[in-house]
Length: 157
Image (tube, rainbow, N blue to C red; front, side):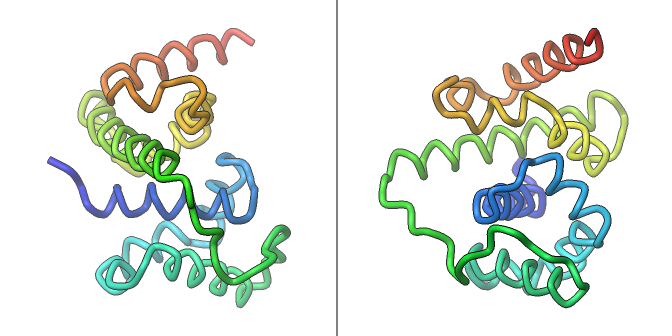
């Protein structure tokens, strides 16, 4: 069953990275340092009532109020996605990531927040949203396998 909160966080996180053109690892660190994850979890009912773009803009404003200087914020709106297939790829990747976070948390006996942290800081996350890899087409089980393979290879470096 889809966890709506995790799915929302995944979408907002991706959109924030795209808007500011910041790496997933840097964005995750920023979200953890300034309590953005907690803010999303605590205000999910309210945030989810408006568009995802509005939620991203709320987070940008929250960070600015906390004194964070955000490079790359050039406008208040996200660029519109005119290519339907690109938006479908993003949606599929978001669903895969959501399911993978939930499944991995259950499998490893850790919280979904800890699992989210591990995946967002991995090369597997980057590959999932690099649509030329085709990883977005595979499903959560293969993504988890790919994540584990990447993690083993990263630990050997």
